[in-house]
Image (cartoon, rainbow, N blue to C red; front, top):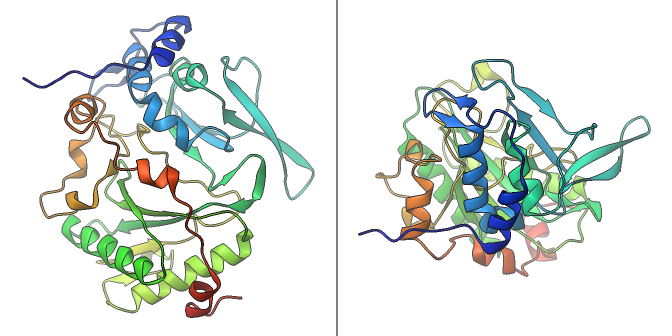
Length: 307
């Protein structure tokens, strides 16, 4: 018999405080996920999700009427936000903007009331948004590319980063791709990190004609786009354990590298299956990421001819 997993005490306390209007409203018709179901799911994953979103500028994808109606993107503060949602003032091209942040369990679980189906944090923290701390590579395959090829691409990136002295971590995106993420100690600015990411992606793409690093759709047929553009000021990537505003309520799921085999099927990870996964895998495969003290050092920058 599979063990059950429960929300943390803090998450259960926060869940009890949340007021949901129309809790029975279906947000995803394919899975039947309701606002109440989303709140319960967020409470369950709060301990694992919060360390990757608190203290960072955040963008949301909101679907208050469910995915069958219009969804919209929100990154700035507005009125009537639930407790636990804060803000950070960030310089923009013209003036400044007050960007959303998630402060605690109540803020995260309260997203259900707002119909938030996607959470996208920045790659930097709110206390110094100009100094990123995560390197993110998004492997986005063309429709005719098998997922096994995406796995091979992610493994190739892992090997390249290891040669540069960087440990990396893997997650599904809740779609047809994979993210490879390497944390690093803050110090470099956005232009340097983007240049480094571009160099790493370009070097990886040069190893196979199956990869491209350009966004042009016409050049991506039959290939995997190695998207390094997420390593730029203001860019975001879907958070670990975030749902997606797609049929079936898929979840962007952290993986152990040992799961990167031909048997891996990203469609398996949904709000219905994640509770069982958490019960079966009590050790968070991304826990080491949160403790990492690695840096993008001078040797790595020199190897990629950056700076």
